[in-house]
Length: 410
Ligand SMILES: Cc1cc2nc3c(=O)[nH]c(=O)nc-3n(C[C@H](O)[C@H](O)[C@H](O)COP(=O)(O)OP(=O)(O)OC[C@H]3O[C@@H](n4cnc5c(N)ncnc54)[C@H](O)[C@@H]3O)c2cc1C
Image 1 (spheres, rainbow, N blue to C red):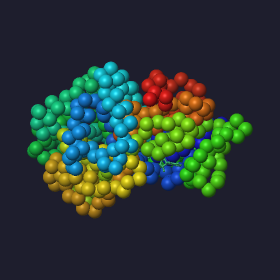
Image 2: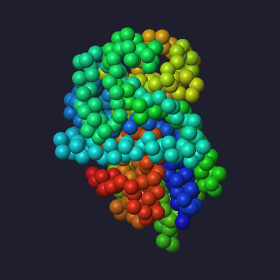
Image 3: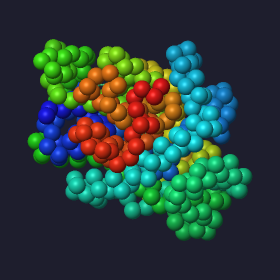
Image 4: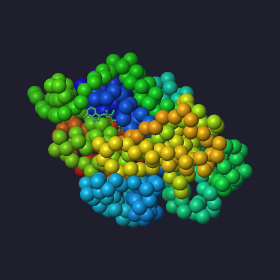
């Protein structure tokens, strides 16, 4: 059985490694080189408590205000507005109370497995040292900010995710660098972080190759069929033959699904990071401040500051003012943070309007599969995605109900 995996981000490499380990002959193809997409520079968090649908009213009610604020956490570039209307209509449709309850359960079902599956994958690759021991602190200036995030905490309580509410002294004991402005925090002990997300992709690729897997450089530009097998056509005329094909090209998967006659409402939610090699401080936990919409993660070689969403399509040039805004906000929480010796980066989160990914066989063509639309949680969901897709692609029963993640749900 030959399987072609299209896209060598964290999702493609986790699937390729899983299938190769279970006896498939896997060819993974990428136009840019493994891990150069969103998986390169994400905020490194196994964010198991962040499965809440973005379409919940407490979020989308703020969107019009954010859009008028050039420094707000969500920015829609005016030129992109007309193209985004159908996506936003679906986003709003995903905010009906019954739909929200279902989406929370669908996200929670993946997140409940995410840390265990990630630890198992790291152990399989001899990379257990690539994850931190500490969790994430969610910060609040005061009781009012904490109450504003109460719906998030209540959902976590409903699904039994571990968390602990901390006062000022306990916060200082855990992270002495945090400002006295922070009056409350919630510790999420399971939200551990990967020391180098790009390094993790490279580790998976090298394990995959050691198992006999093949990595091809090439851009997929079309599909065909010949003698009952799939043809994956590469730019320049080369053709890869496959019994099965899985599309995991991140935010570019929509383009490929259209080529296969199976359009999906996939957009890019662009995000930025600043990797600071000389931050002037050290931290053990990642931190997130919901009211200021940023995250800081200790990573290999310094700390990483990121967050915010920009809707501006796949082609527009990055606007690094967004990185600078996030660093300024991070300095409110970490007064000693210096931004010296740093790099800035922009990446494309593959975003579906209902926030849960597509983990699915094609509804039209036998032997074609999709694993995409992981949005803000691709690193978190990667190991679980590989197990689910591995089951779907080998005819086994996945360990969770995959109906909610089907491609033809839109
Ligand atoms: C700022 C930011 C912070 C984030 N923080 C977190 C976090 O803390 N935790 C978390 O879980 N997630 C986080 N995410 C989300 C996460 O990074 C993504 O969900 C995940 O990386 C998506 O992985 P992927 O493999 O689907 O896509 P990608 O990593 O984008 O990989 C897709 C690959 O497909 C290739 N490709 C595309 N088109 C073609 C083609 N036609 N032919 C061949 N190859 C093709 C690309 O070259 C690319 O390598 C964050 C994202 C951003 C941007």
